[in-house]
Amino acid sequence: MEPGSLAAQSLSNENLIALRRAKHELESPALTMKLASIVGSPLEKLMSRMPAFANEKVTEATELALRKCLALALRTLGRQAGAVPLSAPDKPSNLLHKLAVASTGAAGGAFGLFALPVELPVTTTLMFRSICDIARSEGEDLSSIDTQLQCLTVLGMGGTSKSDDDADFGYFIMRGALAQAVSKASSEIATRGFTAHGSAALLRLLNTIAARFSVQVSEQVAAKSIPAIGAVLGAMVNTVFIDHFQQVAHGHFTVRRLERQYGQETVEAAYQTIDIALDR
Image (tube, rainbow, N blue to C red; front, top):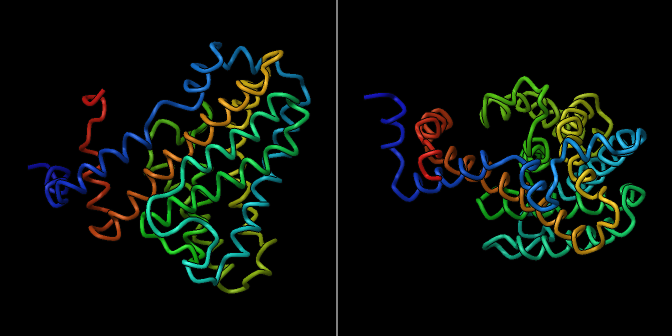
């Protein structure tokens, strides 16, 4: 019998179902496809029409947004998990966060690209809080340095560019590419605490996540670049945006929960045996 099949058998039926659902969430259609279905136009075409200065604005806004998320994470480190101001310890408040992000999308739809420096940090911080909420619901300790950074890396797992060498290898390769940077940043924060905010390891991690996250931000901006998109469609675009990352977060932290129970090697082997194409 194949090792992967043995690994799958070692998981309970309930956990195997959870892992199958996680793989669906982690390998769901790309954000590009989801946004295109909302705006009714290929995003590549829309992105080619964006003004030349748009990429620079996206890069600046993305870095600012992630720095705000990092500051939020560092402020909560060392607190007891129950003291983190998210929701009660049960199911995550996904809908509440979607509604909050939809309202920022409405403003973005009304003001377009020029609203990005104001809207994106707010939207991303709300998404980060939602990701933390999902992590908590899967048994993660939000007072842990590693958990906070894992929440941040979800924003870098939401998709890859065509030029990304990790794009064709799936979740575990993409996660592995971020793991070393997370480990080094965690060590520096554990040693230096708040003074590690500007450390080289932390900045490298932030830059790596920003490079990946900015791809999705560009797609979101392109979807909002349609003339007279309006507040309603802007809210819809933002809802698809946060829903995509909530799915990735659910998948990622489900896998981590199962790894704490069965070990990474067993879970990864079982994950590889699951053919989600058969479920579609």
